[in-house]
Amino acid sequence: MENFEINVNGSTYSVAPQDNGTYRILKGEEKIGVIYAEPGENGTDWKTLDDLDTQLVVNLGQAITDHNA
Image 1 (cartoon, rainbow, N blue to C red):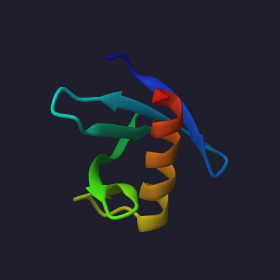
Image 2 (image 1 turned 30 degrees about the vertical axis):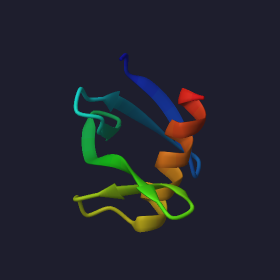
Image 3 (image 1 turned 30 degrees about the horizontal axis):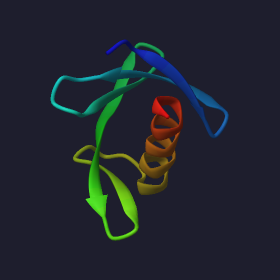
């Protein structure tokens, strides 16, 4: 999978899909974290083990879902 860019809350992020199903998120050249999707009660839940705002993770995940659709 190739890297791509998404726009969330007026900011542009680079997304680097990983072989293990996670997504490395970068803002400029700085890695801000890694997010991943898990099945949830109401569809897909986006999560991270990094110190990222929960709503940002959800918004990034939705933008990734939209990009992959």
